[in-house]
Amino acid sequence: MLATVLQWLVLASVTGVLVGTGVSLFLLALFAITGNTTGIPLWLQMLLLPAGGLANGLLFHYGYRLNRTPLRDGMIAAVHEQRGRMPQRTLPIKPLAALITLGCGGSAGKEGPCSHLGAGLASGLGQLLKLNSELRKRLVACGVSAGFASVFGTPIAGAIYGVEVLAIGRVRHDFLLPAIIGGVTAYEVSLFLGVPYPDYHLDLLAHFSEWLFVKTIAIGIVCGLAARVYVDAFHICRRLFKRLRERFSLWPPLVPLCGGCVLSLLIVWIPVDYLGLSIPLMESALNGDAMPYLGFLWKALLVAITLGSGFYGGVVTPQFVIGAVTGNAFAQLLGISPTLGAAVGLVGVLASASNTPIAAIIMGLELFGSSSLMYMAGASMCAYLLVGHRSIYPDQRLAFTKSSWIHIQPDLPVGQDKLRLSYGLLRWWSRHRNG
Image (cartoon, rainbow, N blue to C red; front, side, top):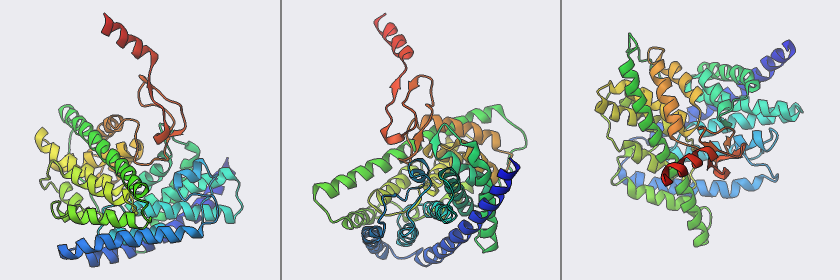
């Protein structure tokens, strides 16, 4: 076992250095590009979105011809289906597509290409060292964790997220040591290379309040429902654009072009604050500024159209924005601090839409300090249950059901699961309905 620890100290540290360097270069390029496109006139923004959609479509259409293997480049598929292997020739495509998406104003996150870089670089290292399939799978999970840790500046939460996201209801403990070592290493490398991280510590609460705990549970329920809207909108838009392409036999690069045109029309009515990363909007919510009740819907809609039509970007940063806006808005109804509501909402939507409650709770601790930990924990678990058996990641496995009233066939992707009510509940319902 000591040899195992030493093995991962070396392998995970090397992975963390590789991933931290790759993610840092991507983030610094992203900050430079978005810094030059923020605040542009509306008419120019309306032109950039379709142009960015066409550029994304062309990049994916021609770029993926370089992949002459049957391997997919999804991080979850690499662990569950491909024994830790990913195609290496297409590794730069998604980061480039994300730079185009966010540079032209598409509504998405920055972590998707970072976790992709982490998984791809780790997979390449595993193949270079001729590791066996079990070690490669651990190394890929380590790379994903390192990517998340580096992009958000939360090394422990990012490490656990990369492991927890693989399956609903199951955490591979044998993946945790490499994930944590890789996550901390990547984070330190990014700090060294000058990647800036915000400080959101909110030491607001001196004593625990049972009544406030109940109110934050209510925030968690609302955020779980908001996460359902986000996840469902995302998958509905993917299906609609797929049917559009098949119905009219569209050339694939034209589909994201159509998505960009739809976005251009929508921003005539929806504020442009919901485009791009929307980090200023999230920070306003965390600062206590009043947020609209339907803000979560505007962000969910723009993200769903952006990513559903064929742009590329992350799906986690939008969860932060949706959660912070939702928690802030409904905290005012419950008579609690909108800042606390925004913090609780942020971790609640992360826990539910990604099905990663443990990582969400630890991220709340790393971002906001320990004073609000119990409130965030209760809200996160309620949101996790309220979203049901759905996920923003279609490849995510469903290992265990969230309710004893529901039976599943384990270890199927969430999009293929067959849920059914338990026999005991059906018998109880039939008896009371007939009685």
